[in-house]
Length: 74
Image 1 (cartoon, rainbow, N blue to C red):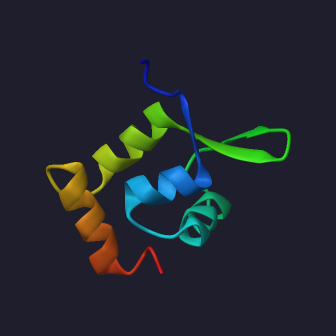
Image 2: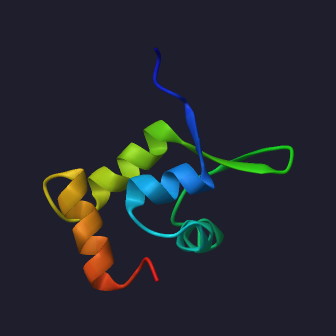
């Protein structure tokens, strides 16, 4: 099965280990890229991976831990 190109807000929240509301706040602040398909808000997987790579830490798990410690996902 091929990798999806886009994630929903809920799926992106699961990847980032935070709430959908926190993902929407990051989108509103311009921190996360997104695309609209009708009323749906979709996050491109490739750009989400770039976002994670830009966070401090050597792995996605460490990056997510750094975000949680900073309080950005509240």
